[in-house]
Every structure is written in structure tokens, then in C-alpha cells.
Amino acid sequence: MLKKLMRVLLLTLLAQTATLAAAQATKVAVGYVPAGDWLPALVAKDKGFFDKRGLDVTLTKVAIISNIPAALMSDSLNIGVSTPTVLIDAAESGLDLAAISGGTRFVKNPAIFSVVVRTGVTVKTAKDLEGKRLGVPGMRSIADVLLRKWLLDNGVQPSKVNLVEASFPQMKDLLKGGTVDAVAVLEPFRSRIVADQTGYRLADYVAEVNPDLLGGVWVARRQWLTANPKAAQAFRDALSEAADFIGKNTEEARAIELKYLGFTTPVALPYAVGLNPADFELYGRFAREVGYLQKPVDGSKLIWK
Image (cartoon, rainbow, N blue to C red; front, top):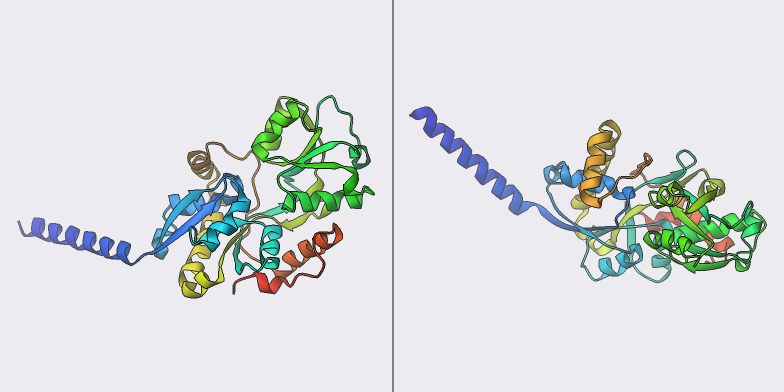
């Protein structure tokens, strides 16, 4: 009888402790776009890495990454995904956002970004793209800036290529319908286009520009970061643990990706939490070369310490 009573008291105490911990957890609204680049956050949520650090994280799927800054500024989100070029433009526009963690890097192997040309259109070099209609996922996006840089590096003025906006999910249909001749596309959309011969890979253009570039970043308002420094650090630490988990538990991580996104990325992405001012400054130099910026970027001002 005494043992049974002690067990009831212990279970009651544990329940009260859990309730208290939940009440004291910091609520964090996190926005992500449906891509494998942000898998560490999905894993951290699914495996309880946020919970054990006192974070009550709500994940919200956002269709277009360019909508994230507005959601952060309106406090609809506390933390969201972004790219170096979007963050640079946000800073240029006076939005006080800062990067708190890296997401992925673009590397040579595996190269996840390519120019893919519609089957039936003959393109062998960058020069052959002159006069062609090429879809990019947003002007001034990371894909657009690096594509323009790649064209310049190959002796092609971007103005001689008809660049049009096309979202990644639309690209395959636009190629099939002949609306565009080529696209600047990444995984998993690239594999889907190439698999049924809708198009063929011309060049892994991002890797040709630079074989090791910062890809995605996690950002937040400085106002929120100043008010919640422990939560910001805990978020970063949870992502780091999740990235380590993904590396050691590939199949389970893929299952989590499928659960949240409805698909899995066919290549292993290089997740990297660390941030370096030089990464942003390099993008700033590229943006100046293609005519998007007039002055250098101070990368240190874009990173939350």
C-alpha cells in the first residue's frame, strides 16, 4: 500500500514539474519554407531538442521565403528562414534583422543548384543562353544573384538573357509547356525535371561561381533577440544538436523530413550552424558586380552575437 501511495505521489510530482516547465517555456514562432535546407529545425521539433532547452516552438510553413521578413517585422514570427541576399537587402531597406544561425552551405559535392535546359533546346555553353528565356525564383534572390555572376564570369551580359520569375514548384511545368527555355533550379526540383527528361543539366552554376558558399540562414528582429538572448542561443544550440543527429541517423531524419514536407531531398545537404561575416561580404561583392548594390557590405553588422 505504501509503495503504491509513493508511486502515485511521484507521478503527481512529475506531472506538476512537467506542467511548470511547460508554463515557463519560452514560446517561439518559427517560419520555414518547404525545403530540405531547414530539416534541422524539423528534427529539433520532432525529437524534443527545443523542448529540453525550454523552448515551446511552433513551426509555420511559409510558401515564399521573401514573405518572411515582413512576418518577422509584424511579430507574426519570431524566427524565420532567409538567405544572405535577402538579409542584405533587408538591411539596405532599414529592416533591423540579424542572422542567428546558418542553415546550409552550397558546395561542389553535392552541388544542389543547376541551370537546367528544356529538352529539345540546344544549349552547350552560357553564351548559348543569350536570347533565351530563363526562369529564376525571384529577382535579387540568391539564385538570381549567383546566376548573373556566373553569366558575367562566362562572358555573358545578364541583360542579353531574358530572365523571368518562376517559383521552384512551377519550373517543371513551365519547361514542359515551353514557357521558359531553361531554369535556375535546386534539389529536389532539379531531380524531378531531369528524371523524366523534361530537361537536362547544363551547369552546376553556383558551385562554378564558388565551391563553398553560405546558403540558408535563420534570422530574427534585433528587438526580439535583445529581449530573448537565452532563447536565441537555445534555438541555435538545438539546431546544432539536430544537425549532428541528422548526420548520425540518416534514415530517421529522412522519415522526419517526409513527415513534415511530404518529400525527401535526394542528396545529403551540408548543414552548418556557424556564421562568418566574410560569407555575407562575399555576397555583397557579387551583388555589386551584377549591379544590385552600390557599396560594400559589413558582414559583422548582419550577425547577432
